[in-house]
Length: 99
Image 1 (cartoon, one colour):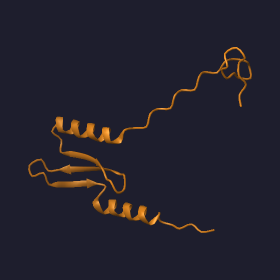
Image 2 (tube, one colour; image 1 turned 135 degrees about the vertical axis):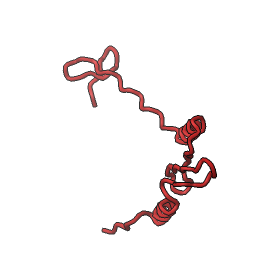
Image 3 (cartoon, one colour; image 1 turned 45 degrees about the vertical axis):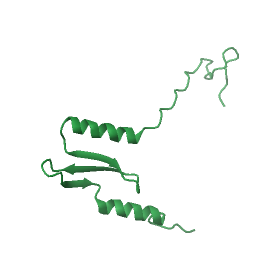
Image 4 (cartoon, one colour; image 1 turned 180 degrees about the vertical axis):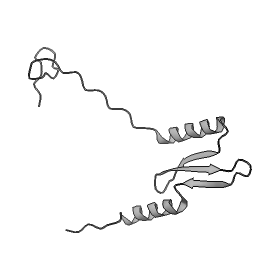
């Protein structure tokens, strides 16, 4: 525990100088709001990208669409990778560590 100034109650260094106050930690990011904003920006710029969070794995998914047909050109990560991530999460991970 650091010594404190008797006058101010603030932490002091060994030299007796007051230390700066600790900064407040940043608030946790709002992923859903960020995803909504990215989708809005892409729509404004007429880009054919869609962002969402996969419910099962919690991963962010990016979908590239064909502008003319609205067909999925590519999805990152793929459905297979998302299914694998869900299966691994359900199984408790890759390895069962034993002592």
